[in-house]
Image (cartoon, rainbow, N blue to C red; front, side, top):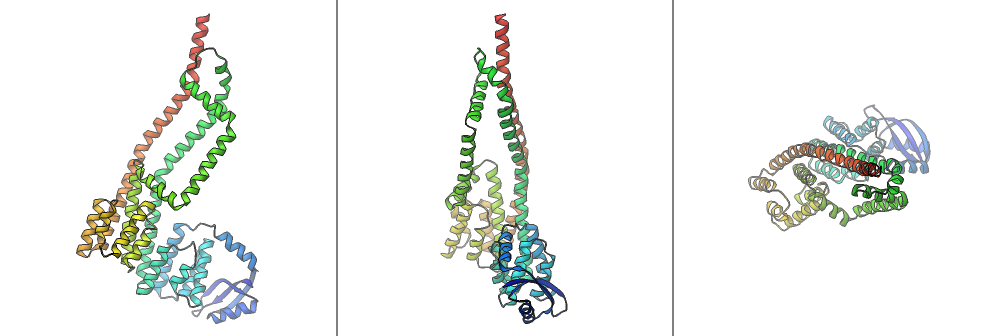
Length: 408
């Protein structure tokens, strides 16, 4: 089997391009003909082995939120215009610049052309389309309102991108400052301090405490550099391995919620994601139990995710949604009150949208406030480090000068 890059025309005469697996060029042409296309050309691009290598490498290419949002909006345009799905996907494949997404779109078109349903074709593209994406497409496909569902889906993707960017922007400045401080401290310890160490150690005056601490740190770096690097590397690797386990993710996410200021932002972000995702999935016609199962995977915190699953289990027992929310003892009173009101009045979707908008605003406000708090804290930390180094280096000089004057 070989891979052939083909050009063909569909039933409307539009030129489509893609790739196809076939034993010979003739077989590739025959396959295109059986798919309803008028073959134009088919050129072999390489063996199955090289194609497999390319497919393997594509798995490591990241699909950005922008790429997926753009594709979803174009997909909605295809549905609204009434263009046949396969032809529309061939056109979208040409317009997509991300190679991994382009390959996935091509695969979806081929799966549909072979008789697969739209949602099943999406589900087979592992690591490209999330569970929530596939579930919403399946809902729109089943209910017949795919265009409306795709509009909601693109809005949901934009919301997820916005919340991630908000958190990243909040952490970018403090992360940069902390890394700079660490690099500066290590540079001083390894470059500047060693020039003063022999003088301090040979002096006959009693060294002040800051200098003694600095000398101990310098000795550790000079004598045990390899051991320190190995220990730090082992701790980092152990942390990431632990983080990949279910127990690790749960424990770390619990700790995150308890961090001052940061925990508040994480909680509000999770509440916003919970409400927005729940509202969109319910509006798309997905059953509440299935919806909560999906929401638990999108809130972004393992501790809250387990609480959502507990709510789902209680709803299955016929307890409604507001009472399990209250029993979870993690959702703020505002969330419980608005969802309870929506459940009683039949306006649950509207209340969930209100919750999402409220916490979206709260996250932005809290992030701005966090930035205002972090800047003076980092400034004080920087000043403290500079003061410590200055005292550690210059205090012995003053003592040595006093000793020299006294001796003179």
